[in-house]
Image (tube, rainbow, N blue to C red; front, top):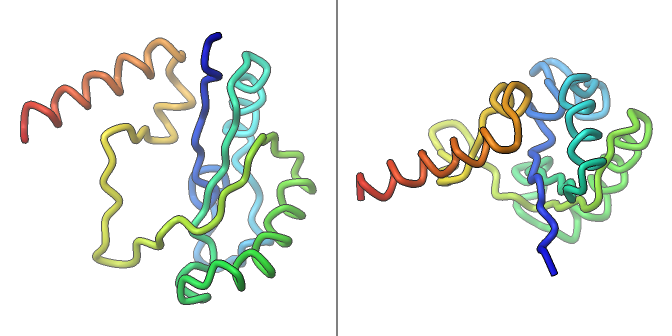
Length: 134
């Protein structure tokens, strides 16, 4: 049995192009990203959304985060008809001067412009480059 392919999508500033002056519930999703998510989901991909929303504010308290932030985020996703199969909270917050380092990260523009086969090739090239540099 073939394993279901997944897309792991960060909500804030990837799915939702949130200006710094807006609150989480005020921003609208990027229409092109939502369209692309629908295409991938229709092609059999599992869409997994994740976020570090309110991780700094809640001081990493997942219970508090799930009680308040999760409810509002789910309302926002429903209101904007964003497709997803799973929703994960609690991604560590990378503040100013912090970095997320991962060998499989794609820029939102790459996700929008490339085919699934091109994305696989791009990730493979990056992983090879990272491995060569270690």
